Length: 223
Image 1: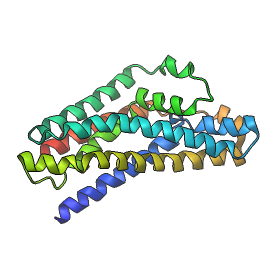
Image 2: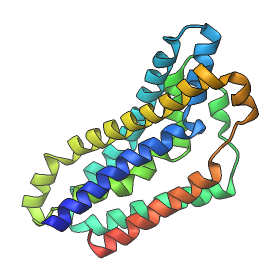
Image 3: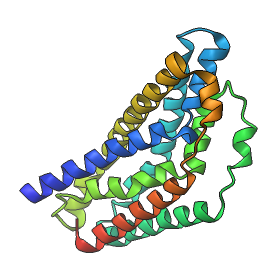
């Protein structure tokens, strides 16, 4: 029982820290919040922009997690589903290692449509996929029933868990991205942003491979 609780706690911390990680990554949009505040010359433009970015990110997370929450109803195939999800995340990481170019569709989205941009960016970069192995691990912990009884139990909790995971992750991302954006806006300014622009594409791709590997390993080990 204590082992299960420790695993659940570790997985929820993974949800939170992955949100922090997404938040500090400029590819998830915090520079757009800084730009909005600077261009409109209003402090309130930043939280509004961050809220739109958070909405788009949340919808992307739900769009990825919900199908897996339904798939795990097939309790007898739980291990195969988790392994397949892990391999999918690894494949996305390898693809991003090979293809470093940012999707052209993101450049075609008007900057004012931040929620849409955030949704597409999260989908294109595999941000939602990164959560899948963690989410499946949370759903699997403590599922010691089998067959129809387990399916009924899962049906009442997995969809709710998907929404909670997406919310906790998005909230963490918004806090981290908001702190970075606030520091840039109040103290460092747009020149610093343009001179020290960085991207985490390589780290991002390797992180996907690492998380996918974790998902496959935990499925085989029964965690």
